[in-house]
Picture 1 (cartoon, rainbow, N blue to C red):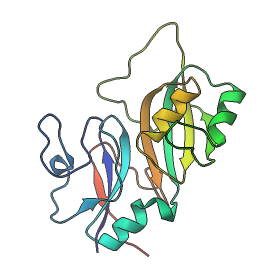
Picture 2: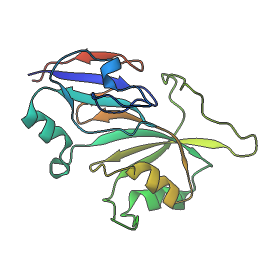
Picture 3: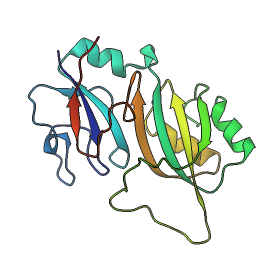
Picture 4: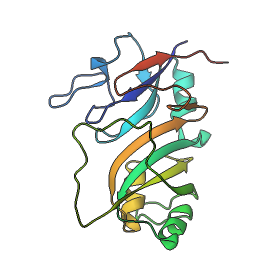
Length: 182
């Protein structure tokens, strides 16, 4: 059984099959018969887990298992206490209500790599960083949550899944590492 940690670059599709307009995971990992355990949108970056084991893939990605996922989020604006509290509580996004989560206003991490292409900068609008820990992961959930409280997402980086993180396993975009399961 293989378990691969990959730092998925921005604008890369989270699939191995060909995509007509964008690079895929196949441009970074050339190991047969492995598949992503979960997904990240093309415009999101960071940690994804790849495996050749279907049971492990299901255990990592299926919402019933509620594995925590950690995200660093650069948002437009400066969050108020009220906005942070709204993000922590169940939030009605129209088609579903989020589970409670952990949210902290943080400084930009000094180990973070620059994004290519860079985030747009507006002289009159500040940006801030948040750390969110969710146990669910519905389609575009973090982006939808921050937008719902008036803090549009500019950059989204998943840094952790369960016990694996880019802090404990430093990888630059496009780099990967095989890890042993204990």
